[in-house]
Figure (cartoon, rainbow, N blue to C red):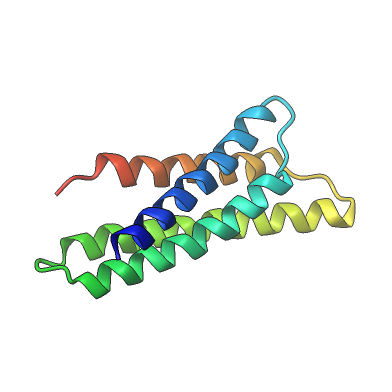
Length: 119
């Protein structure tokens, strides 16, 4: 079980790197790249699998469930902003600066919650 969890943690971290890296690479000319879009998809999938693995292993005090729920909400926000950005690009429309920065900024907030929130 630990090997499966480690693989999904690696996928989760690489997905986060794709989102934040795409955001930082295009910071002066904000957009939502394909790497950010795929990163958002894989971040949600790997996050849900990790949530399920955590539930299977059991959480005695329930505090971890609050953190994971907040991370899930942040992950959905990243996914939705990436989806809206990619849809606008596919239609040939301009992406607002706020939408592009919301994708990367929310991903950074999710990473900070994951690393700084200790129990």
